Image (cartoon, rainbow, N blue to C red; front, top):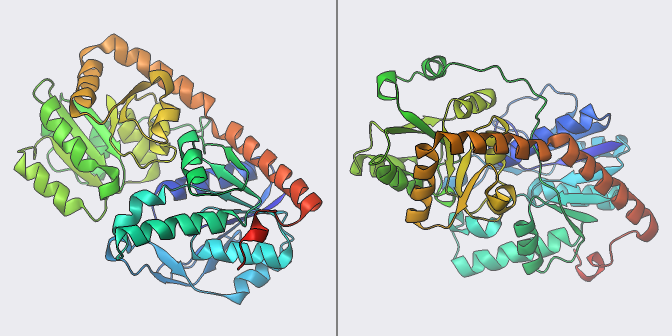
Length: 400
């Protein structure tokens, strides 16, 4: 099968959508499919990969989302698309590249599948508009973009419910991305990892129980909640918290760390290499997570893949992954519930080991090869539906 992936987020950006796109593309190729990727060109960088077609782009106008790009129209990309004899389009973000995916599907009569990765309602605070207007805009975009697609993929059941609430009437399948359990990841000593990232005072970590989290340092990821939770947990356990990621709220988070006197208990590592993320997680006792905006909790799945249990607040994606507290605990947003769950895990080594085994088993159930096989079946169903019925009936109600 010849597949065109259209995404507004790709390397050198670092986020969950990029990880998901790379994971799915790699597995599709491993399963014998031809995959071509259409994405923005960042900061004039050239992409030497023959499978990737890049649109010229400019930075997003909102200051707190400056790493995002707006792709400019480029007929060369669409001409290349026309020569590829694509069987199915799979878009990842309803942005400018997503619009070009709609146009390509309409011009060349190719079925279009879309993965709704992000709960955009939780990101409206980044838009320089009144909240009510931004909310209506998100719903309008979801309804009209998805209504022109042959099929929608949702990463979780909670996200599917949210999409339906927006009035989307396209068929929706719940298929998480999954993680590659076949990959061999050599264990790295914590001291080597810290030296690699120029950590200047390893003594303050030595002998402590390690908590870790990964995410963008933005309001939607609720990092300040984790810092406040640490202030409570440190009274019961000798712990250190490693936070991997960067973002617009770093200054605010650093101020909170200083205010709570946690300078020797928290390390903001910034961005690290993808394989090193796994290594840091594997060296930690527990992965903690407070974001309630995740549509599938991919970083939680990556933690479980290396056997590190999770304590997270219940949310759209978290609830699917930690169903029945397999591999960790999903708690209410109550600080008491969250810190008690962390305390329970760190106080009982037998429980921690049992949750570690559960975590690996759950990650095996969500392996990427199983999930991508389901995506391929969705492609096949969409192609057959397109052959039989052409444009989806719901698309006819929404005109360009």
